[in-house]
Amino acid sequence: MFDRLFGLFSVDMGIDLGTCNTLVAVRGQGIVLNEPSVVAVWKGTNRVVRNGEAVGWMAKEMLGKTPGTITAIRPLKDGVISDFEITEAMLGYFIRKVTGKNKLIRPRVVISIPSGITAVEKQAVYGSAERAGARRTYLIEEPIAAAIGAGLPFAEPTASMIVDIGGGTTEVAIMSLGDIAVCESVRVAGDDMDEAIINHMKKTYNLMIGEQTAERIKIDIGSAAPVGDEKTMEVRGRDMISGLPRKTVVSSEEIREALQEPVSAITEAVTRTLERAEPELAADLVENGVTMAGGGSLLRGLDVVVSNATGLPVKIADDPLTCVARGTAIYLEHIEEWKITLESDLDV
Image (tube, rainbow, N blue to C red; front, side, top):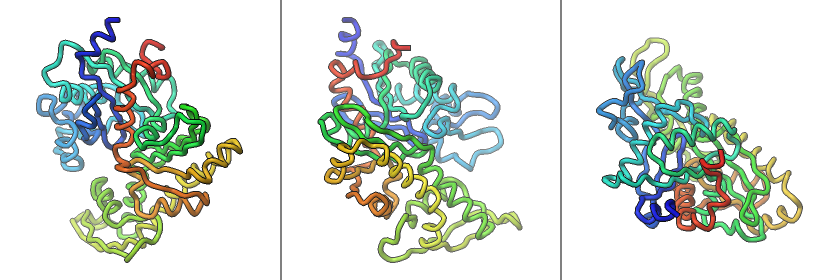
Protein backbone atom coordinates (compact mmCIF):
# COMPACT_ATOMS: atom_id res chain seq x y z
CA MET A 1 0.00 0.00 0.00
CA PHE A 2 2.79 2.42 0.95
CA ASP A 3 4.71 1.56 -2.21
CA ARG A 4 1.65 2.40 -4.31
CA LEU A 5 1.14 5.66 -2.37
CA PHE A 6 4.78 6.68 -2.79
CA GLY A 7 4.46 5.84 -6.49
CA LEU A 8 1.98 8.71 -6.90
CA PHE A 9 4.64 11.23 -5.87
CA SER A 10 7.96 9.66 -6.96
CA VAL A 11 9.60 10.19 -10.34
CA ASP A 12 9.58 6.53 -11.42
CA MET A 13 11.96 5.84 -14.27
CA GLY A 14 13.10 3.21 -16.73
CA ILE A 15 16.82 2.93 -17.43
CA ASP A 16 18.48 1.41 -20.47
CA LEU A 17 21.85 0.77 -18.82
CA GLY A 18 24.00 0.35 -21.91
CA THR A 19 27.68 -0.29 -22.49
CA CYS A 20 27.99 2.85 -24.65
CA ASN A 21 25.02 5.02 -23.64
CA THR A 22 22.55 5.18 -20.77
CA LEU A 23 19.01 6.37 -21.52
CA VAL A 24 16.46 7.29 -18.87
CA ALA A 25 12.71 7.44 -19.50
CA VAL A 26 10.22 8.83 -16.99
CA ARG A 27 6.67 7.55 -16.70
CA GLY A 28 4.38 9.84 -18.66
CA GLN A 29 7.24 11.96 -20.08
CA GLY A 30 9.21 9.60 -22.34
CA ILE A 31 12.99 9.83 -22.67
CA VAL A 32 14.46 12.62 -20.57
CA LEU A 33 18.16 11.73 -20.61
CA ASN A 34 20.55 10.17 -23.11
CA GLU A 35 24.23 10.32 -22.15
CA PRO A 36 27.36 8.20 -22.68
CA SER A 37 28.09 5.55 -20.02
CA VAL A 38 31.41 7.18 -19.12
CA VAL A 39 32.76 8.47 -15.80
CA ALA A 40 35.96 10.49 -15.22
CA VAL A 41 37.71 9.73 -11.91
CA TRP A 42 40.94 10.73 -10.21
CA LYS A 43 43.52 8.06 -11.04
CA GLY A 44 43.90 5.39 -8.36
CA THR A 45 40.59 6.35 -6.70
CA ASN A 46 36.86 6.08 -7.35
CA ARG A 47 36.28 9.80 -6.75
CA VAL A 48 34.50 11.41 -9.68
CA VAL A 49 36.20 14.51 -11.09
CA ARG A 50 34.65 17.99 -10.78
CA ASN A 51 32.65 17.35 -7.61
CA GLY A 52 30.95 14.27 -9.03
CA GLU A 53 29.78 16.02 -12.21
CA ALA A 54 32.25 14.50 -14.72
CA VAL A 55 29.77 11.89 -15.95
CA GLY A 56 28.16 11.32 -19.34
CA TRP A 57 28.93 13.84 -22.08
CA MET A 58 31.46 15.73 -20.00
CA ALA A 59 33.39 12.52 -19.30
CA LYS A 60 33.17 11.24 -22.89
CA GLU A 61 34.86 14.40 -24.14
CA MET A 62 37.80 13.43 -21.92
CA LEU A 63 38.20 9.91 -23.40
CA GLY A 64 41.73 9.51 -24.73
CA LYS A 65 42.60 13.09 -23.77
CA THR A 66 43.03 12.93 -19.99
CA PRO A 67 46.20 13.96 -18.13
CA GLY A 68 48.02 11.43 -15.96
CA THR A 69 45.93 12.31 -12.89
CA ILE A 70 42.52 11.56 -14.46
CA THR A 71 41.07 8.36 -15.96
CA ALA A 72 37.91 8.22 -18.09
CA ILE A 73 36.20 4.87 -17.45
CA ARG A 74 33.35 3.00 -19.09
CA PRO A 75 32.09 0.96 -16.10
CA LEU A 76 30.05 -1.51 -18.16
CA LYS A 77 31.55 -4.14 -20.42
CA ASP A 78 29.60 -6.46 -22.71
CA GLY A 79 26.34 -5.14 -21.25
CA VAL A 80 27.16 -5.95 -17.63
CA ILE A 81 28.78 -4.10 -14.73
CA SER A 82 32.56 -4.41 -14.64
CA ASP A 83 33.17 -1.70 -12.01
CA PHE A 84 30.53 -1.63 -9.26
CA GLU A 85 31.53 1.60 -7.50
CA ILE A 86 31.85 3.63 -10.68
CA THR A 87 28.49 2.29 -11.97
CA GLU A 88 26.90 3.28 -8.68
CA ALA A 89 28.32 6.81 -9.00
CA MET A 90 27.08 7.05 -12.60
CA LEU A 91 23.58 5.79 -11.77
CA GLY A 92 23.39 8.13 -8.79
CA TYR A 93 24.32 11.10 -10.99
CA PHE A 94 21.70 10.22 -13.62
CA ILE A 95 18.97 9.58 -11.03
CA ARG A 96 19.72 12.90 -9.28
CA LYS A 97 19.72 14.70 -12.63
CA VAL A 98 16.26 13.33 -13.47
CA THR A 99 14.59 13.61 -10.06
CA GLY A 100 15.98 17.09 -9.41
CA LYS A 101 14.74 18.49 -6.12
CA ASN A 102 12.41 15.57 -5.40
CA LYS A 103 14.77 13.78 -2.99
CA LEU A 104 12.34 12.84 -0.22
CA ILE A 105 10.66 9.98 -2.08
CA ARG A 106 13.10 7.73 -3.88
CA PRO A 107 12.01 6.44 -7.31
CA ARG A 108 11.06 2.98 -8.44
CA VAL A 109 13.38 1.98 -11.26
CA VAL A 110 12.98 -0.50 -14.12
CA ILE A 111 16.39 -1.46 -15.55
CA SER A 112 16.91 -3.40 -18.77
CA ILE A 113 19.46 -6.22 -18.65
CA PRO A 114 20.92 -8.62 -21.26
CA SER A 115 19.04 -11.90 -21.34
CA GLY A 116 22.22 -13.93 -20.83
CA ILE A 117 23.58 -12.41 -17.61
CA THR A 118 24.15 -14.47 -14.48
CA ALA A 119 22.48 -14.27 -11.07
CA VAL A 120 25.64 -12.65 -9.66
CA GLU A 121 25.55 -9.98 -12.38
CA LYS A 122 21.86 -9.34 -11.65
CA GLN A 123 22.67 -8.91 -7.97
CA ALA A 124 25.30 -6.32 -8.93
CA VAL A 125 22.65 -4.32 -10.80
CA TYR A 126 20.29 -4.44 -7.80
CA GLY A 127 23.01 -3.33 -5.40
CA SER A 128 24.23 -0.48 -7.58
CA ALA A 129 20.70 0.82 -8.20
CA GLU A 130 19.75 0.70 -4.50
CA ARG A 131 22.88 2.51 -3.37
CA ALA A 132 22.40 5.04 -6.17
CA GLY A 133 19.00 6.02 -4.76
CA ALA A 134 16.32 3.61 -6.08
CA ARG A 135 13.46 2.72 -3.72
CA ARG A 136 12.57 -0.46 -5.62
CA THR A 137 14.39 -2.00 -8.57
CA TYR A 138 12.81 -4.18 -11.25
CA LEU A 139 14.72 -5.91 -14.04
CA ILE A 140 13.40 -6.43 -17.55
CA GLU A 141 15.19 -8.39 -20.26
CA GLU A 142 16.38 -6.18 -23.11
CA PRO A 143 14.66 -8.11 -25.94
CA ILE A 144 11.26 -7.67 -24.24
CA ALA A 145 11.87 -3.95 -23.62
CA ALA A 146 13.06 -3.50 -27.22
CA ALA A 147 10.02 -5.34 -28.60
CA ILE A 148 7.66 -3.16 -26.53
CA GLY A 149 9.48 -0.01 -27.61
CA ALA A 150 9.37 -1.09 -31.27
CA GLY A 151 5.62 -1.65 -31.06
CA LEU A 152 5.74 -5.39 -31.77
CA PRO A 153 2.68 -7.50 -30.80
CA PHE A 154 4.82 -9.58 -28.44
CA ALA A 155 1.87 -10.34 -26.10
CA GLU A 156 -0.24 -11.89 -28.87
CA PRO A 157 -0.21 -15.58 -29.92
CA THR A 158 2.00 -14.89 -32.91
CA ALA A 159 5.78 -14.86 -33.27
CA SER A 160 7.68 -11.58 -33.06
CA MET A 161 11.44 -11.50 -33.62
CA ILE A 162 13.74 -8.74 -32.37
CA VAL A 163 17.47 -8.28 -32.97
CA ASP A 164 18.76 -5.65 -30.54
CA ILE A 165 22.36 -4.66 -31.33
CA GLY A 166 23.80 -2.49 -28.57
CA GLY A 167 27.33 -1.49 -27.68
CA GLY A 168 28.37 -4.62 -25.78
CA THR A 169 25.80 -7.31 -26.60
CA THR A 170 23.47 -8.41 -29.36
CA GLU A 171 20.16 -9.81 -28.14
CA VAL A 172 18.23 -12.05 -30.53
CA ALA A 173 14.80 -13.25 -29.38
CA ILE A 174 11.61 -14.78 -30.71
CA MET A 175 8.62 -13.89 -28.53
CA SER A 176 5.02 -14.97 -28.24
CA LEU A 177 2.28 -14.52 -25.62
CA GLY A 178 4.23 -11.94 -23.64
CA ASP A 179 7.39 -13.97 -23.06
CA ILE A 180 10.55 -15.16 -24.79
CA ALA A 181 10.26 -18.47 -26.63
CA VAL A 182 13.82 -18.64 -27.99
CA CYS A 183 16.66 -16.29 -27.20
CA GLU A 184 20.38 -15.91 -27.73
CA SER A 185 22.68 -13.26 -26.29
CA VAL A 186 26.11 -12.82 -27.87
CA ARG A 187 28.78 -10.44 -26.63
CA VAL A 188 29.48 -9.09 -30.10
CA ALA A 189 28.06 -5.68 -30.98
CA GLY A 190 28.96 -2.06 -31.72
CA ASP A 191 32.12 -2.03 -29.58
CA ASP A 192 33.48 -5.00 -31.52
CA MET A 193 32.86 -3.13 -34.78
CA ASP A 194 34.91 -0.20 -33.43
CA GLU A 195 37.66 -2.60 -32.32
CA ALA A 196 37.72 -4.21 -35.79
CA ILE A 197 38.25 -0.77 -37.35
CA ILE A 198 41.05 0.05 -34.87
CA ASN A 199 42.79 -3.25 -35.69
CA HIS A 200 42.40 -2.62 -39.43
CA MET A 201 44.07 0.79 -39.13
CA LYS A 202 46.95 -0.76 -37.16
CA LYS A 203 47.55 -3.63 -39.58
CA THR A 204 47.03 -1.75 -42.84
CA TYR A 205 48.35 1.74 -42.11
CA ASN A 206 50.45 1.36 -38.93
CA LEU A 207 48.17 4.08 -37.56
CA MET A 208 46.91 4.08 -33.99
CA ILE A 209 43.45 5.62 -33.58
CA GLY A 210 41.16 5.98 -30.56
CA GLU A 211 37.68 4.62 -29.87
CA GLN A 212 35.94 7.87 -30.76
CA THR A 213 37.69 8.09 -34.13
CA ALA A 214 36.79 4.45 -34.88
CA GLU A 215 33.16 5.18 -34.03
CA ARG A 216 33.13 8.19 -36.39
CA ILE A 217 34.55 6.04 -39.20
CA LYS A 218 31.85 3.41 -38.57
CA ILE A 219 29.07 6.00 -38.60
CA ASP A 220 30.33 8.04 -41.57
CA ILE A 221 31.50 5.38 -44.06
CA GLY A 222 30.92 1.98 -42.40
CA SER A 223 28.61 -0.58 -44.00
CA ALA A 224 27.84 -4.29 -43.94
CA ALA A 225 26.93 -4.50 -47.65
CA PRO A 226 27.48 -2.25 -50.69
CA VAL A 227 24.97 0.61 -50.51
CA GLY A 228 25.15 3.49 -52.96
CA ASP A 229 28.42 5.13 -53.94
CA GLU A 230 31.63 4.17 -52.17
CA LYS A 231 32.96 6.88 -49.83
CA THR A 232 36.34 7.92 -48.47
CA MET A 233 37.33 9.63 -45.22
CA GLU A 234 40.42 11.34 -43.88
CA VAL A 235 41.58 9.72 -40.63
CA ARG A 236 44.06 11.19 -38.14
CA GLY A 237 46.03 9.28 -35.53
CA ARG A 238 49.52 8.42 -34.29
CA ASP A 239 52.05 6.67 -36.49
CA MET A 240 53.08 3.41 -34.79
CA ILE A 241 56.61 3.56 -36.21
CA SER A 242 57.62 7.21 -35.85
CA GLY A 243 55.27 7.97 -32.95
CA LEU A 244 54.27 11.23 -34.66
CA PRO A 245 50.77 12.46 -35.62
CA ARG A 246 49.76 11.47 -39.15
CA LYS A 247 46.70 11.34 -41.38
CA THR A 248 45.59 8.98 -44.12
CA VAL A 249 42.53 8.32 -46.29
CA VAL A 250 40.41 5.17 -45.96
CA SER A 251 37.58 3.88 -48.15
CA SER A 252 34.17 2.50 -47.25
CA GLU A 253 35.04 -0.71 -49.13
CA GLU A 254 38.00 -1.55 -46.85
CA ILE A 255 36.03 -0.65 -43.71
CA ARG A 256 33.25 -2.99 -44.88
CA GLU A 257 35.84 -5.75 -45.22
CA ALA A 258 37.16 -4.99 -41.72
CA LEU A 259 33.65 -5.30 -40.27
CA GLN A 260 32.97 -8.72 -41.77
CA GLU A 261 33.90 -10.68 -38.63
CA PRO A 262 31.50 -8.94 -36.15
CA VAL A 263 28.77 -8.74 -38.81
CA SER A 264 29.09 -12.49 -39.48
CA ALA A 265 28.92 -13.26 -35.74
CA ILE A 266 25.67 -11.29 -35.44
CA THR A 267 24.17 -12.93 -38.53
CA GLU A 268 25.07 -16.39 -37.24
CA ALA A 269 23.37 -15.65 -33.92
CA VAL A 270 20.18 -14.75 -35.81
CA THR A 271 20.23 -17.94 -37.89
CA ARG A 272 20.96 -20.12 -34.81
CA THR A 273 17.97 -18.62 -33.01
CA LEU A 274 15.72 -19.29 -36.00
CA GLU A 275 16.92 -22.90 -36.19
CA ARG A 276 15.80 -23.46 -32.57
CA ALA A 277 12.30 -22.01 -33.09
CA GLU A 278 9.20 -24.22 -33.02
CA PRO A 279 7.73 -24.83 -36.51
CA GLU A 280 4.58 -22.74 -35.84
CA LEU A 281 6.65 -19.79 -34.64
CA ALA A 282 8.94 -20.09 -37.65
CA ALA A 283 5.88 -20.12 -39.91
CA ASP A 284 4.65 -16.83 -38.37
CA LEU A 285 8.00 -15.19 -39.03
CA VAL A 286 7.73 -15.80 -42.77
CA GLU A 287 5.08 -13.06 -42.74
CA ASN A 288 6.03 -11.07 -39.61
CA GLY A 289 9.72 -10.92 -40.41
CA VAL A 290 12.55 -9.59 -38.23
CA THR A 291 12.75 -6.22 -36.51
CA MET A 292 16.15 -4.70 -35.73
CA ALA A 293 16.79 -2.24 -32.92
CA GLY A 294 19.74 -0.72 -31.08
CA GLY A 295 22.46 1.60 -32.36
CA GLY A 296 24.27 -1.23 -34.16
CA SER A 297 21.27 -1.79 -36.43
CA LEU A 298 22.00 1.61 -38.03
CA LEU A 299 25.10 0.20 -39.75
CA ARG A 300 24.26 0.64 -43.41
CA GLY A 301 23.34 -2.56 -45.22
CA LEU A 302 23.14 -4.72 -42.09
CA ASP A 303 19.42 -5.31 -42.62
CA VAL A 304 20.18 -6.49 -46.16
CA VAL A 305 22.83 -8.94 -44.89
CA VAL A 306 20.43 -10.39 -42.27
CA SER A 307 17.61 -10.66 -44.82
CA ASN A 308 19.86 -12.48 -47.31
CA ALA A 309 21.05 -14.89 -44.60
CA THR A 310 17.57 -15.74 -43.31
CA GLY A 311 15.31 -15.25 -46.32
CA LEU A 312 12.98 -13.19 -44.13
CA PRO A 313 11.82 -9.59 -44.49
CA VAL A 314 13.87 -7.33 -42.18
CA LYS A 315 12.92 -3.85 -41.01
CA ILE A 316 14.62 -1.36 -38.71
CA ALA A 317 12.48 -0.06 -35.84
CA ASP A 318 11.58 3.60 -35.64
CA ASP A 319 14.31 5.41 -33.69
CA PRO A 320 16.17 2.16 -32.93
CA LEU A 321 18.57 3.84 -30.49
CA THR A 322 15.78 4.49 -28.00
CA CYS A 323 13.68 1.33 -28.39
CA VAL A 324 14.76 -0.29 -25.10
CA ALA A 325 14.34 2.92 -23.09
CA ARG A 326 10.90 3.56 -24.60
CA GLY A 327 9.96 -0.02 -23.76
CA THR A 328 10.86 0.49 -20.09
CA ALA A 329 8.76 3.68 -20.07
CA ILE A 330 5.74 1.79 -21.42
CA TYR A 331 6.31 -0.90 -18.79
CA LEU A 332 6.26 1.83 -16.14
CA GLU A 333 2.84 2.92 -17.39
CA HIS A 334 1.54 -0.59 -16.59
CA ILE A 335 3.81 -1.43 -13.66
CA GLU A 336 1.01 -2.29 -11.22
CA GLU A 337 -0.51 -4.90 -13.53
CA TRP A 338 2.73 -6.16 -15.08
CA LYS A 339 5.21 -6.07 -12.19
CA ILE A 340 4.41 -9.69 -11.29
CA THR A 341 6.23 -10.67 -14.50
CA LEU A 342 9.34 -8.64 -13.60
CA GLU A 343 12.26 -9.70 -11.46
CA SER A 344 12.45 -7.49 -8.39
CA ASP A 345 14.97 -6.76 -5.67
CA LEU A 346 12.48 -8.37 -3.27
CA ASP A 347 12.96 -11.68 -5.10
CA VAL A 348 16.66 -12.01 -4.20
